[in-house]
Image 1 (cartoon, one colour):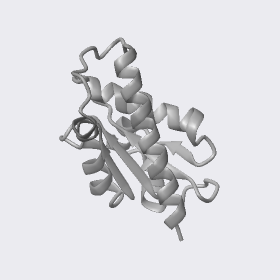
Image 2: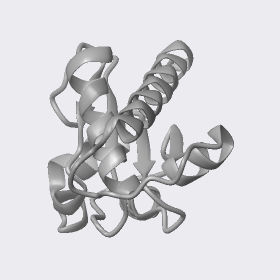
Image 3: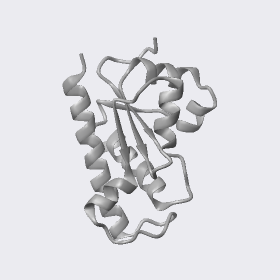
Length: 138
C-alpha cells in the first residue's frame, strides 16, 4: 500500500491540450490542491499513471480518487477504471459548462477573465466532491 497519511483524496486531471476545457481541468485541480483543500488532496499524474507508474496506480487503487476530464473522451476516468478501479467521483468539464450555460471559451493558452471564472467554479465543484468523498469514506 502507498505510504500516505489517512484521509487523502487523489485528483487525476485531464492531460489533453487540444481544448480549453483540458486546461481548465488542470488549473482547477491545482486550485483545489494548493488553496481549497490542500490538506485533503494529492495529485496523481495522468501521463505517469498511463505509463505504468506503480505508486500512482497503487494510490488510486487504495484511496478514493476524483477524475477531472476536460471532455467526453473521459481519458482520466477510463484509465483509472482500467488500471486501479472505479473513481469515487468523476467530473467532466464540458458537462459542467453546458449546465452553467457559459459563454464560448476559446483560448487554451491564455485564460481570460471569463475562463478564469469558469475555472474557479470547476475548482469549487471539485472541492465539493472532495468533501463528499471524505464524508462517506469508511
